Amino acid sequence: MEKIMRRFLWAGCSVEKKINWIAWDIITTPKKEGGLGVSKLEDVNDTLLLKWAWCFKTGGNCLWKKVVIGCYGLSRNWSLLPCTASASGCWKQIVKIGEKKIWSGKTLGSYFEGIVGDGLETKKWAVVADRIRVVSGSKSLLWEWRAEPSSDVEVSDLFNLMEDIYDYVWKGGLDKWRWKASGSNRFTISSARRLLSSYSRPVIDMQMKWKCWTPLKCKIMVWRAILNRLPTKVELYKRGVNLQSVVCGLCDTDTETYTHIFTGCFFAAEIWSRVDSWCRLTPSIVFDINDLMKITKSQPLTKQAKYILRGIIFTTLWTIWNERNDRIFQGKRRRATEHQNDFVFLV
Ligand SMILES: [Zn+2]
Image 1 (cartoon, rainbow, N blue to C red):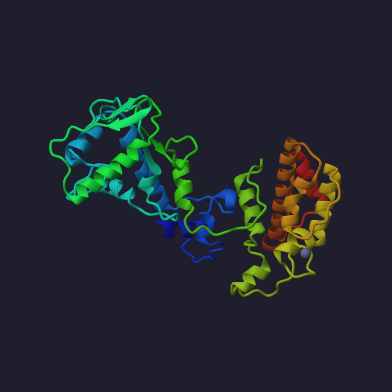
Image 2 (cartoon, rainbow, N blue to C red):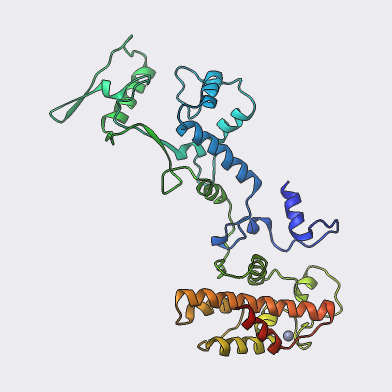
């Protein structure tokens, strides 16, 4: 399925073989960390299985839980979810997801934590409050043995249990479950996805901000430009595409790199100069597209004005790229002044 997704991203419904411009690992990295935030199907599936596990632990006494307990529950089952060795089908998949280890070395099940309330809940196999007496601040443990622990294993288990419960601070209320990967302690799809996608994530250093008023296709183009993954002539040549020339489609004088097109080219310089004076920006030195992304930070503007300015910068980049494409593929030429009029109308 992911192979089809990857293919669709670059080739759409076409059967032709197209260049994969960006590694799938980068595309599936969250936006905040420089990727495009597309989910891996395996992560989506794991997240939804985890949600079933969470619903089982916290979903009250509904019918489907009774059926699961009826089919797989044992009288003394201490695992996260009830299951038998002979279980099969989707319930077994849900149980197995708790055993899956992630990047931290922990299992996903370990992110579910049971919090003991006041120990007074009924319908439990053992009520903790019945076993602990506190007299003048000192605790004593009481047992009603059917048979005294005698083997090494039983005595060891008893000591471990006493160690666990003796210093436990009771927080009161009913027993409950918390999901440790979320600040709210409640399971959320987004927190589970974050947890799963932390695995083998590439480190991407970039200045991209997605909070912007331009259409998504414009933002994706800017993101690709920052990563130098647009099909400029130099990049096409590097990937083995047979080209007559790698000269810039805008000025016909210099080599068409992404840095040249968006900052070095005299056509781009004229557009940026018009944008600067129209927006009354304080002058800044720009060498490449990352410098352009930093302009909003360096300007003494309000948050709202910076948001608007970011959109203007993105739109300008979009315009420059489209002008280049129009000149190469359709033979159309527009002047910088015409583009500036479009901006004023748009904003
Ligand atoms: Zn040029």
